[in-house]
Length: 212
Image 1 (tube, one colour):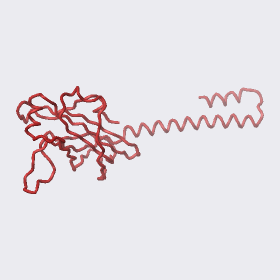
Image 2 (cartoon, rainbow, N blue to C red):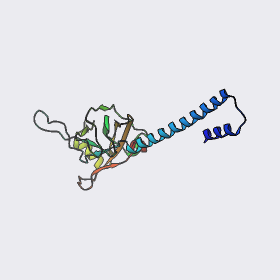
Image 3 (spheres, rainbow, N blue to C red):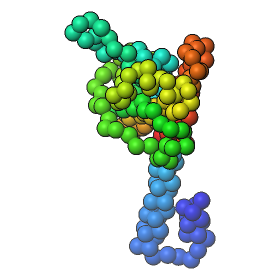
Image 4 (cartoon, rainbow, N blue to C red):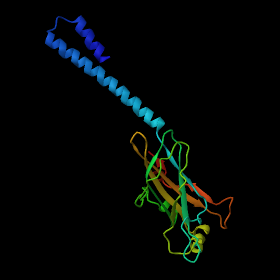
């Protein structure tokens, strides 16, 4: 619109020196070009947002299944272990760069800091996750607590604590953009083990559950 107004002014106005005519025409051309580039940029950004990869966590609700190998005597100690895969709900492949998760026993959800504090990312160099596919190499995170499985279980089943998971996955899309999915989960546990009731549910401050 600005460029057309400039051209109309040139047509209706008095005689202009050739040098100034070139300046005005160049300015009009630049404005038209900038408008076109801006429209292309906005279109590309829109395409990237609608076609991008989006990873969501797919977790195991049993907290004592560990993927760690048995000990030398063939036994396998029970752990409170969080196992998670990731599913790509987007339209283009996702390239996972790093994963981190921590399963902890806390006094209550309210005791969590408003901003999550994550450990170092575990670098990942597997195949890209194509649309509608799920990783087939579960990431396992045992609880860092020296107490026995039974002691920890007694705490949260009696309501004296909450078993909580905070985690995130960092990945790239095919457009070269870096993304992150965060998730916070509370283990809902009955006073005694109940296969129909016990499970992880999304919980925690807003900053714990988001993607960008």
